[in-house]
Length: 264
Ligand SMILES: [Zn+2]
Ligand SMILES: [Zn+2]
Image (cartoon, rainbow, N blue to C red; front, side):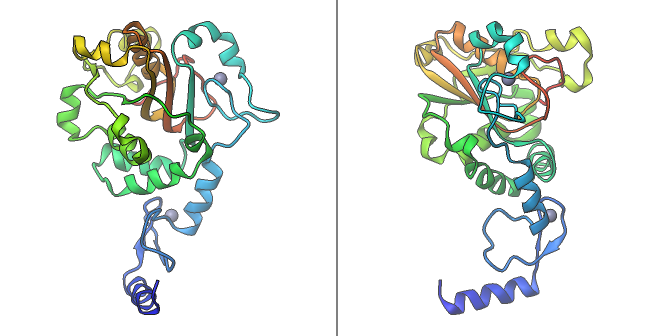
């Protein structure tokens, strides 16, 4: 980088300080204007939110001590989990500033946080240690919600987090056939039935494409795992080999099918 480039950049940042995407505070970012566009305090919080070993080898929940192993919840539900989602990995706990970036992406249509979120996720071992899948499937939105939002955040995240596997990303195989009510609005049994039959294979040809394939499902936030679980069920019934999942964030203290609300 030339001296003049650095000088111009420093002057630019002096005159027009950046706004942190996490807390909206103005801050000086003399090193670079490239993502992650976060202030020093939010960067420290990213480090706190980053999921590091040890974690559950199935659901990915952070554990307190020892090597990676099965958490109690996965031991209890082991049969159901083994037949559906083989493993879930997430880069961060769903807390500030990660939650702010996800909310901006998902609910305000502000896509500027996408590059920052993906840049941060690609630096985590949860993402870097993933085995190369045969196919990557973003969790689909129902057509009605896709029209309202204008984009599928899971597809954008899949493309931004896995540029090296871009050709493996397929959004034309799985579809959401029912417009489901957000899980947060439901209680008890309604949550369990809400997502049933919500997903299906898009065409008969989709079944041929997934035959025997190792598939990585991608979603923004893991809360109960019920969305991933329902997608995996459809894919396995269609003949897929094994289903793993990656989400950028996950809520703390929950495990697959623990009955807590999912963000959809
Ligand atoms: Zn900040
Ligand atoms: Zn677990």
